[in-house]
Length: 139
Figure 1: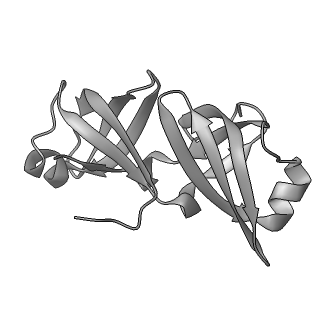
Figure 2: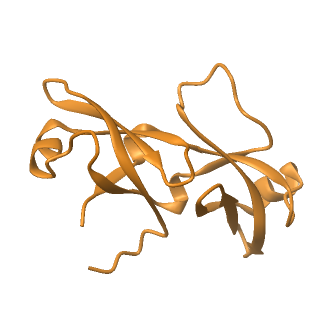
Figure 3: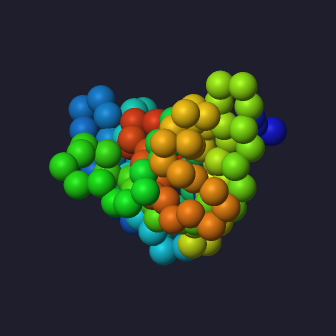
């Protein structure tokens, strides 16, 4: 299956915290960073997710926010530090390719945000992704 979701980072399930309807799944990415996905309990069962399971963390580029440093005092748990590889500007939006340890991701943000943050190739950034915006896939 081919997907339009640009961000597909491989990893391994570390923990599954079940709930009545939703569960949180901590995934260690190949680069060593941890991300948390909030998915339905039904999905945990259907995908047979347990510690040690190989997964891909999937998230749309429109669900990635960028900051110029780690952000404290915010509910977003997933903060991946990286370096801007390339910025492609459009009329209103921009695509920002970010290299992170063990891979790369894309953020679709406004052109104004790129300019306000001063993002260029080589800029240090932190990619912010809400746990509810990360889907998990198995092979």
